[in-house]
Image 1 (cartoon, rainbow, N blue to C red):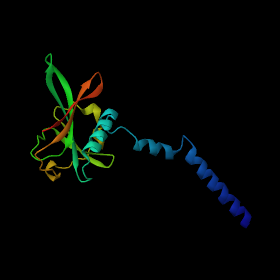
Image 2 (cartoon, one colour; image 1 turned 30 degrees about the vertical axis):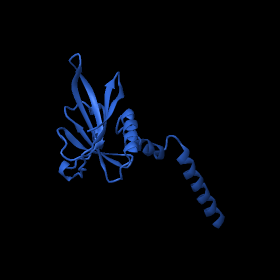
Image 3 (spheres, rainbow, N blue to C red; image 1 turned 90 degrees about the vertical axis):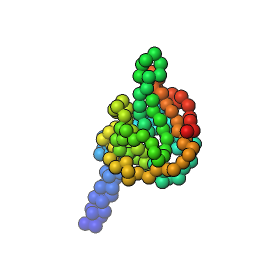
Image 4 (cartoon, one colour; image 1 turned 30 degrees about the horizontal axis):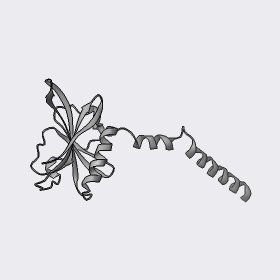
Length: 159
């Protein structure tokens, strides 16, 4: 009887291990869910580049702002500014925060023009007044322009 119980236990373990490698299992479906769309891939690359260049501590809250301006031939061009949350900034269109690679990122989308570049279901609304800001006189930011479906760095600026 003891051998039968051990045999059944070993079969159970083998079946459990086999299910983890099965592509149709719930394990892999949950893994894919965590990799779902939160922010446009190009924006994530530019954001990670900005984070590595600025080298702030983990307490800094970053800011991604979507806006449109008349730049060329009276067409509205779509721009994205990546910066950190400095005090006295314009917060018109503040939507909430996202977690991107363990960083807190506030999203500001003035005319809802950036909605296709982030997943609003992952936004967590926290009152802007509760977010810490930095009192800096030199503000480092990166400006991106949407050009043929890709974000191109226009310049990095220090305000």
